[in-house]
Amino acid sequence: MSFYFDHNATTPLSVAARDTWLKTTEKYWHNPSSLYPEAGAAARRLEDEREKLAQILGVDNEENPGITFTSGATEANNSTISHFATANPSKYCAISAIEHPSVDAPANRHFGNRVIKLPVTPEGIVSLSSLEEIIARGNVCLVSVMAANNETGVIQPLPEISSLCQKYNTLFHCDAVQWFGKHPSREIVPLADIVIGSAHKFGGPKGTGFLRTSRHARELQMQNGGPQEQGKRAGTENLPGIAAMVSSLEDADETLILWEDQRQARDGFEATILSSLPETTIVAKNAKRLPNTSMMIMPSGRNLKWLTRLGRRGFAVSTGSACSSGSADGSHVLDSMGLSPEEINRALRISSGTDNGRDQWAALATALKEVAKDINHHETTTGKSLI
Image (cartoon, rainbow, N blue to C red):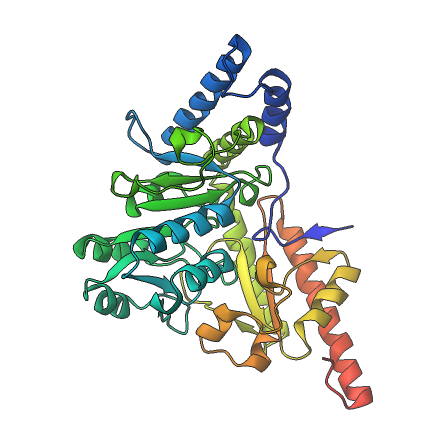
């Protein structure tokens, strides 16, 4: 039997998304930019999906809802950073020290020495005093702070960040990939000038996402080469993927109550682990977190050994961000929170979906205790740490 606990990396395709994709790809496979009647029907369906997504996001029913369909969050984040770096050659970009690599890497590339890293507390929360001190100087064109961290699950103080950016007339860019599908979509969109989502994080298909801009950031240009997406992103739109994404997000928003069960199951799981393996540390345990996420520093043994042994028992977990799993430097998120390299090498991330019942959480706790015994036995009999 296999139990999947890596939903922050990707989620299985939902029934709603699968059904919508199949129906749309069968009926609306034509190029929406062509001129014959079938293409016109596809173009109208595309705009219907844009309108539907605008309603889900709580965007006013205006002529231009500011929604651009993308291939996902990595493209949207890269395009956002690149655009503002080019448009503001003498200004700075302030990003949190715990941003996803799809924000951190392009910021370093395009802004170079004009990147300011916002420090976080030991709980992984952006320092609001540092943010205000930095943007009060008047030379920051963009602030990038994610809604919720993909590794620790820590939710950022978005209303306060939004207020500070408005106070100092600075654009706020928010990678909300981990937010959508777990919290109400309407809550986050009014807080930032640029909000980004990715379908495969909430049961939609991979290779599909969206970027929502407020009227203050409508000049954002993504890629050239055609008139698609109001001229902001050239390339034939992936209409079946877009329709499937919208259906999946609509379904996710209607079933948010299921996440409270996950929160309770997660909290019970953590209590069990701390009781049976008291040397374990729950990262940011007392911070406001996503209901499905638990980042743990295990008592001993390198995290890859834990991951391998759990995998043999049928449990899929993670050591952190899927986009930096090949890095030899470990988690920059945990490093920014003050953890040592040795602690970072013992980190495991558990991230559930609404289909992970309490029995699965209990089974995972049992498996972790078994792996702990395995590691302790190895260290006792060999006198060497299992690394």
